[in-house]
Image (cartoon, rainbow, N blue to C red; front, side, top):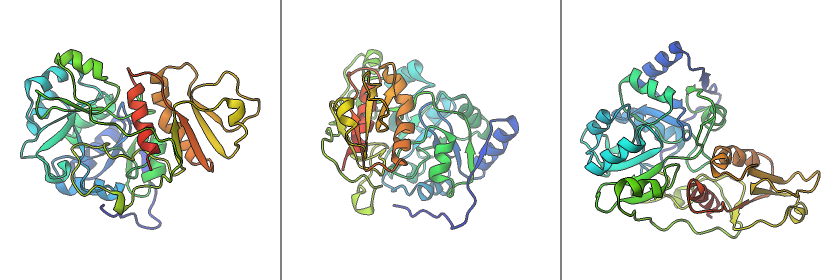
Length: 355
Protein backbone atom coordinates (compact mmCIF):
# COMPACT_ATOMS: atom_id res chain seq x y z
CA UNK A 1 0.00 0.00 0.00
CA UNK A 2 1.27 3.49 -0.81
CA UNK A 3 1.45 5.51 2.40
CA UNK A 4 -0.84 8.46 2.86
CA UNK A 5 1.03 11.74 2.69
CA UNK A 6 -1.34 14.07 4.55
CA UNK A 7 0.57 16.70 6.50
CA UNK A 8 -0.63 17.61 10.03
CA UNK A 9 -2.48 20.92 10.01
CA UNK A 10 -3.12 20.89 6.28
CA UNK A 11 -6.25 22.83 5.28
CA UNK A 12 -9.32 20.84 4.27
CA UNK A 13 -10.15 20.52 0.60
CA UNK A 14 -12.09 23.31 -1.06
CA UNK A 15 -15.55 22.35 -2.33
CA UNK A 16 -16.25 24.20 -5.58
CA UNK A 17 -19.62 24.95 -7.11
CA UNK A 18 -19.94 23.88 -10.77
CA UNK A 19 -19.62 27.35 -12.30
CA UNK A 20 -17.94 27.75 -15.73
CA UNK A 21 -15.01 29.50 -14.07
CA UNK A 22 -14.53 26.73 -11.51
CA UNK A 23 -14.81 24.01 -14.14
CA UNK A 24 -12.11 25.69 -16.21
CA UNK A 25 -9.90 26.06 -13.13
CA UNK A 26 -10.32 22.42 -12.10
CA UNK A 27 -9.72 21.21 -15.65
CA UNK A 28 -6.42 23.12 -15.54
CA UNK A 29 -5.55 21.43 -12.23
CA UNK A 30 -6.08 18.03 -13.87
CA UNK A 31 -4.14 19.00 -16.99
CA UNK A 32 -1.07 19.92 -14.94
CA UNK A 33 -1.10 16.66 -12.97
CA UNK A 34 -3.25 17.51 -9.95
CA UNK A 35 -6.11 15.68 -8.25
CA UNK A 36 -9.78 16.66 -8.25
CA UNK A 37 -12.61 14.76 -6.57
CA UNK A 38 -15.45 14.64 -9.10
CA UNK A 39 -19.11 13.60 -9.13
CA UNK A 40 -20.29 10.72 -11.25
CA UNK A 41 -23.72 9.14 -11.51
CA UNK A 42 -22.45 6.20 -9.42
CA UNK A 43 -20.21 7.54 -6.60
CA UNK A 44 -17.71 10.39 -6.31
CA UNK A 45 -14.32 9.64 -7.84
CA UNK A 46 -10.79 10.95 -7.23
CA UNK A 47 -9.61 11.96 -10.68
CA UNK A 48 -6.19 12.41 -12.27
CA UNK A 49 -4.81 12.42 -15.80
CA UNK A 50 -4.87 8.73 -16.68
CA UNK A 51 -1.86 9.05 -19.02
CA UNK A 52 0.32 10.76 -16.39
CA UNK A 53 2.00 8.21 -14.12
CA UNK A 54 3.04 10.79 -11.52
CA UNK A 55 -0.49 12.18 -11.33
CA UNK A 56 -1.99 8.72 -10.87
CA UNK A 57 0.52 7.89 -8.16
CA UNK A 58 -0.99 10.77 -6.17
CA UNK A 59 -4.33 8.93 -6.20
CA UNK A 60 -2.75 5.90 -4.55
CA UNK A 61 -1.04 8.05 -1.93
CA UNK A 62 -4.15 10.08 -1.09
CA UNK A 63 -6.35 7.00 -0.71
CA UNK A 64 -3.79 4.66 0.85
CA UNK A 65 -4.58 2.35 -2.05
CA UNK A 66 -2.44 -0.71 -2.84
CA UNK A 67 -0.72 -0.66 -6.23
CA UNK A 68 -2.26 -4.09 -6.96
CA UNK A 69 -5.72 -2.51 -7.28
CA UNK A 70 -6.15 -0.97 -10.76
CA UNK A 71 -8.03 2.22 -11.64
CA UNK A 72 -11.03 2.79 -13.91
CA UNK A 73 -10.32 5.23 -16.73
CA UNK A 74 -13.13 7.61 -17.66
CA UNK A 75 -13.31 8.85 -21.25
CA UNK A 76 -15.28 11.54 -23.06
CA UNK A 77 -16.14 9.53 -26.18
CA UNK A 78 -15.98 6.15 -27.86
CA UNK A 79 -13.11 7.47 -29.97
CA UNK A 80 -11.12 8.31 -26.85
CA UNK A 81 -11.87 4.86 -25.44
CA UNK A 82 -10.37 3.37 -28.61
CA UNK A 83 -7.18 5.38 -27.99
CA UNK A 84 -6.53 3.60 -24.68
CA UNK A 85 -8.18 0.18 -25.20
CA UNK A 86 -8.70 -2.35 -27.98
CA UNK A 87 -12.44 -2.28 -28.64
CA UNK A 88 -13.75 -5.59 -29.95
CA UNK A 89 -17.21 -5.85 -31.63
CA UNK A 90 -18.85 -6.95 -28.37
CA UNK A 91 -17.49 -3.87 -26.58
CA UNK A 92 -18.81 -1.60 -29.32
CA UNK A 93 -22.28 -3.19 -29.07
CA UNK A 94 -22.39 -2.66 -25.33
CA UNK A 95 -21.06 0.90 -25.64
CA UNK A 96 -23.80 1.70 -28.16
CA UNK A 97 -26.41 0.37 -25.74
CA UNK A 98 -25.16 1.66 -22.37
CA UNK A 99 -22.65 4.49 -22.83
CA UNK A 100 -22.68 7.06 -21.46
CA UNK A 101 -23.63 5.21 -18.31
CA UNK A 102 -22.59 3.03 -15.34
CA UNK A 103 -20.86 0.24 -17.29
CA UNK A 104 -17.12 -0.43 -17.10
CA UNK A 105 -15.48 -2.71 -19.66
CA UNK A 106 -12.16 -4.49 -19.05
CA UNK A 107 -10.32 -4.68 -22.38
CA UNK A 108 -6.79 -5.12 -23.72
CA UNK A 109 -4.93 -1.85 -23.17
CA UNK A 110 -2.96 0.36 -25.53
CA UNK A 111 0.68 1.06 -24.74
CA UNK A 112 -0.07 4.69 -23.82
CA UNK A 113 -1.74 3.62 -20.56
CA UNK A 114 0.77 3.64 -17.67
CA UNK A 115 1.37 0.45 -15.72
CA UNK A 116 0.34 2.13 -12.46
CA UNK A 117 -3.20 2.53 -13.82
CA UNK A 118 -3.59 -1.15 -14.67
CA UNK A 119 -1.64 -2.74 -11.78
CA UNK A 120 0.88 -3.83 -14.40
CA UNK A 121 -1.64 -5.92 -16.30
CA UNK A 122 -2.23 -5.90 -20.04
CA UNK A 123 -5.84 -4.80 -19.63
CA UNK A 124 -7.55 -1.54 -18.72
CA UNK A 125 -10.97 -0.82 -17.20
CA UNK A 126 -12.71 1.93 -19.18
CA UNK A 127 -16.02 3.77 -18.84
CA UNK A 128 -17.83 6.67 -20.50
CA UNK A 129 -19.69 8.35 -17.60
CA UNK A 130 -23.13 9.92 -17.80
CA UNK A 131 -22.75 12.71 -15.24
CA UNK A 132 -22.84 16.04 -17.12
CA UNK A 133 -20.25 17.79 -14.93
CA UNK A 134 -17.68 15.03 -15.31
CA UNK A 135 -18.30 14.95 -19.04
CA UNK A 136 -17.67 18.71 -19.21
CA UNK A 137 -14.42 18.29 -17.26
CA UNK A 138 -13.35 15.53 -19.64
CA UNK A 139 -13.94 17.82 -22.60
CA UNK A 140 -12.22 20.80 -20.98
CA UNK A 141 -9.05 18.99 -19.91
CA UNK A 142 -8.91 16.86 -23.06
CA UNK A 143 -7.44 13.86 -21.26
CA UNK A 144 -8.89 10.54 -20.05
CA UNK A 145 -9.25 10.56 -16.28
CA UNK A 146 -8.45 7.73 -13.90
CA UNK A 147 -10.91 7.98 -11.02
CA UNK A 148 -11.47 5.38 -8.28
CA UNK A 149 -13.91 6.20 -5.49
CA UNK A 150 -12.88 9.31 -3.54
CA UNK A 151 -12.53 7.72 -0.11
CA UNK A 152 -9.87 6.06 2.05
CA UNK A 153 -9.19 2.64 0.56
CA UNK A 154 -11.66 -0.02 1.72
CA UNK A 155 -14.03 2.44 3.41
CA UNK A 156 -17.62 3.31 2.47
CA UNK A 157 -17.83 5.02 -0.92
CA UNK A 158 -18.83 8.72 -1.04
CA UNK A 159 -22.03 9.88 -2.70
CA UNK A 160 -21.82 13.59 -1.80
CA UNK A 161 -19.07 16.21 -1.78
CA UNK A 162 -19.36 16.34 2.02
CA UNK A 163 -18.58 12.61 2.21
CA UNK A 164 -15.41 13.18 0.19
CA UNK A 165 -14.30 16.03 2.43
CA UNK A 166 -14.94 13.98 5.57
CA UNK A 167 -12.70 11.16 4.32
CA UNK A 168 -10.04 12.79 2.15
CA UNK A 169 -10.42 16.48 2.95
CA UNK A 170 -6.97 16.71 4.50
CA UNK A 171 -5.30 14.76 1.69
CA UNK A 172 -6.54 16.57 -1.42
CA UNK A 173 -7.17 20.21 -2.36
CA UNK A 174 -10.11 20.19 -4.77
CA UNK A 175 -13.66 18.77 -4.73
CA UNK A 176 -16.24 19.53 -7.42
CA UNK A 177 -19.75 19.56 -5.94
CA UNK A 178 -22.22 17.85 -8.24
CA UNK A 179 -24.88 17.10 -5.65
CA UNK A 180 -25.87 13.62 -4.50
CA UNK A 181 -25.10 10.77 -6.89
CA UNK A 182 -28.20 9.62 -8.75
CA UNK A 183 -27.41 5.87 -8.68
CA UNK A 184 -25.39 5.53 -5.48
CA UNK A 185 -23.39 2.33 -6.08
CA UNK A 186 -20.38 1.71 -8.28
CA UNK A 187 -20.56 0.76 -11.96
CA UNK A 188 -21.12 -2.70 -13.36
CA UNK A 189 -17.78 -4.20 -14.46
CA UNK A 190 -17.61 -6.69 -17.33
CA UNK A 191 -14.46 -8.51 -18.40
CA UNK A 192 -14.47 -8.49 -22.21
CA UNK A 193 -10.84 -9.36 -22.88
CA UNK A 194 -12.16 -12.54 -24.47
CA UNK A 195 -15.57 -11.63 -25.96
CA UNK A 196 -16.38 -15.32 -26.38
CA UNK A 197 -16.29 -15.71 -22.57
CA UNK A 198 -17.54 -12.46 -20.98
CA UNK A 199 -17.33 -12.39 -17.19
CA UNK A 200 -19.45 -10.21 -14.89
CA UNK A 201 -16.89 -9.07 -12.32
CA UNK A 202 -19.03 -6.63 -10.34
CA UNK A 203 -22.82 -6.10 -10.47
CA UNK A 204 -24.20 -2.59 -10.73
CA UNK A 205 -27.06 -0.60 -12.21
CA UNK A 206 -26.60 -2.27 -15.61
CA UNK A 207 -27.90 -5.75 -14.87
CA UNK A 208 -26.73 -9.15 -16.00
CA UNK A 209 -30.00 -9.60 -17.89
CA UNK A 210 -29.49 -6.36 -19.80
CA UNK A 211 -25.94 -7.30 -20.77
CA UNK A 212 -26.90 -10.80 -21.87
CA UNK A 213 -29.71 -9.43 -24.01
CA UNK A 214 -27.34 -7.17 -25.95
CA UNK A 215 -24.57 -9.75 -26.27
CA UNK A 216 -26.90 -12.65 -27.05
CA UNK A 217 -24.98 -14.96 -24.72
CA UNK A 218 -24.74 -15.87 -21.06
CA UNK A 219 -22.21 -14.28 -18.79
CA UNK A 220 -19.89 -16.13 -16.46
CA UNK A 221 -20.26 -14.92 -12.86
CA UNK A 222 -17.48 -15.55 -10.31
CA UNK A 223 -18.39 -16.70 -6.83
CA UNK A 224 -19.60 -13.80 -4.72
CA UNK A 225 -18.75 -13.13 -1.06
CA UNK A 226 -20.67 -15.43 1.25
CA UNK A 227 -23.46 -14.08 3.43
CA UNK A 228 -21.81 -12.85 6.63
CA UNK A 229 -23.81 -14.31 9.49
CA UNK A 230 -21.41 -13.59 12.34
CA UNK A 231 -20.06 -10.41 13.87
CA UNK A 232 -16.54 -9.42 12.96
CA UNK A 233 -14.17 -6.49 13.02
CA UNK A 234 -14.45 -4.22 10.00
CA UNK A 235 -11.39 -2.02 10.40
CA UNK A 236 -9.91 -0.63 7.22
CA UNK A 237 -7.62 -2.93 5.28
CA UNK A 238 -4.23 -3.62 6.84
CA UNK A 239 -1.08 -4.40 4.92
CA UNK A 240 -1.38 -8.08 5.83
CA UNK A 241 -4.90 -8.29 4.37
CA UNK A 242 -4.06 -6.72 1.01
CA UNK A 243 -3.61 -8.83 -2.13
CA UNK A 244 -0.08 -9.73 -3.18
CA UNK A 245 -1.07 -10.04 -6.83
CA UNK A 246 -2.77 -7.61 -9.18
CA UNK A 247 -6.56 -7.48 -9.28
CA UNK A 248 -8.20 -7.49 -12.70
CA UNK A 249 -10.53 -4.64 -11.73
CA UNK A 250 -11.38 -2.56 -8.65
CA UNK A 251 -13.96 -3.61 -6.08
CA UNK A 252 -13.16 -7.32 -6.20
CA UNK A 253 -11.58 -7.81 -2.77
CA UNK A 254 -13.61 -9.96 -0.34
CA UNK A 255 -13.86 -7.06 2.13
CA UNK A 256 -14.59 -3.60 0.77
CA UNK A 257 -17.01 -0.66 1.14
CA UNK A 258 -16.80 -1.33 4.88
CA UNK A 259 -17.67 0.77 7.94
CA UNK A 260 -15.37 0.62 10.94
CA UNK A 261 -18.28 -0.53 13.11
CA UNK A 262 -18.68 -4.33 12.93
CA UNK A 263 -21.44 -5.13 10.45
CA UNK A 264 -23.31 -8.37 9.83
CA UNK A 265 -25.61 -9.20 6.94
CA UNK A 266 -28.62 -11.42 7.60
CA UNK A 267 -31.30 -12.95 5.40
CA UNK A 268 -33.99 -11.58 7.71
CA UNK A 269 -33.70 -9.27 10.69
CA UNK A 270 -35.75 -9.84 13.85
CA UNK A 271 -39.06 -8.05 14.26
CA UNK A 272 -38.60 -4.38 15.20
CA UNK A 273 -40.07 -4.93 18.67
CA UNK A 274 -37.36 -7.47 19.41
CA UNK A 275 -34.66 -5.36 17.75
CA UNK A 276 -35.57 -2.44 20.01
CA UNK A 277 -34.42 -4.52 22.99
CA UNK A 278 -30.82 -4.28 21.73
CA UNK A 279 -30.30 -0.53 22.10
CA UNK A 280 -26.54 -0.61 21.37
CA UNK A 281 -27.04 -2.30 18.00
CA UNK A 282 -28.31 -0.47 14.90
CA UNK A 283 -30.73 -2.48 12.76
CA UNK A 284 -30.77 -1.58 9.06
CA UNK A 285 -33.88 -2.92 7.33
CA UNK A 286 -34.34 -2.90 3.58
CA UNK A 287 -37.83 -1.40 3.76
CA UNK A 288 -39.31 0.74 6.50
CA UNK A 289 -40.86 -1.60 9.10
CA UNK A 290 -44.60 -1.20 9.47
CA UNK A 291 -44.63 -1.88 13.22
CA UNK A 292 -41.58 -0.21 14.67
CA UNK A 293 -42.00 0.55 18.38
CA UNK A 294 -42.61 4.21 19.17
CA UNK A 295 -39.43 5.89 20.32
CA UNK A 296 -37.07 3.15 19.12
CA UNK A 297 -33.83 4.90 18.16
CA UNK A 298 -31.96 1.91 16.73
CA UNK A 299 -34.33 1.11 13.83
CA UNK A 300 -33.27 2.33 10.36
CA UNK A 301 -34.15 1.48 6.77
CA UNK A 302 -32.95 2.06 3.21
CA UNK A 303 -36.25 2.76 1.46
CA UNK A 304 -39.84 3.50 2.46
CA UNK A 305 -41.13 2.10 -0.84
CA UNK A 306 -39.33 -1.24 -1.19
CA UNK A 307 -37.61 -0.16 -4.42
CA UNK A 308 -33.94 -1.24 -4.74
CA UNK A 309 -33.16 1.92 -6.77
CA UNK A 310 -34.17 4.04 -3.77
CA UNK A 311 -32.13 1.83 -1.47
CA UNK A 312 -29.05 2.22 -3.69
CA UNK A 313 -29.20 6.00 -3.44
CA UNK A 314 -29.43 5.72 0.36
CA UNK A 315 -27.09 2.83 1.19
CA UNK A 316 -23.71 4.52 1.59
CA UNK A 317 -25.06 7.66 3.26
CA UNK A 318 -26.92 5.48 5.77
CA UNK A 319 -23.87 3.31 6.49
CA UNK A 320 -21.75 6.43 7.03
CA UNK A 321 -24.29 7.89 9.44
CA UNK A 322 -24.49 4.64 11.40
CA UNK A 323 -20.71 4.35 11.48
CA UNK A 324 -20.48 7.74 13.18
CA UNK A 325 -23.30 6.97 15.61
CA UNK A 326 -21.27 5.13 18.28
CA UNK A 327 -23.14 1.87 17.79
CA UNK A 328 -21.40 -1.26 18.99
CA UNK A 329 -22.64 -3.20 15.95
CA UNK A 330 -24.74 -2.86 12.81
CA UNK A 331 -27.08 -5.63 11.65
CA UNK A 332 -28.21 -5.21 8.03
CA UNK A 333 -30.86 -7.03 6.03
CA UNK A 334 -30.28 -8.92 2.77
CA UNK A 335 -32.01 -7.20 -0.16
CA UNK A 336 -34.80 -9.39 -1.61
CA UNK A 337 -34.76 -10.31 -5.28
CA UNK A 338 -32.21 -11.37 -7.89
CA UNK A 339 -32.78 -8.77 -10.59
CA UNK A 340 -32.20 -5.06 -11.07
CA UNK A 341 -30.07 -3.43 -8.38
CA UNK A 342 -30.64 -6.14 -5.74
CA UNK A 343 -27.50 -8.14 -6.72
CA UNK A 344 -25.37 -4.97 -6.60
CA UNK A 345 -26.68 -3.98 -3.19
CA UNK A 346 -26.12 -7.46 -1.76
CA UNK A 347 -22.63 -7.56 -3.26
CA UNK A 348 -21.70 -4.31 -1.50
CA UNK A 349 -23.30 -5.33 1.79
CA UNK A 350 -21.66 -8.76 1.76
CA UNK A 351 -18.21 -7.22 1.17
CA UNK A 352 -18.84 -4.61 3.87
CA UNK A 353 -19.74 -7.42 6.30
CA UNK A 354 -16.79 -9.67 5.47
CA UNK A 355 -14.25 -10.17 8.24
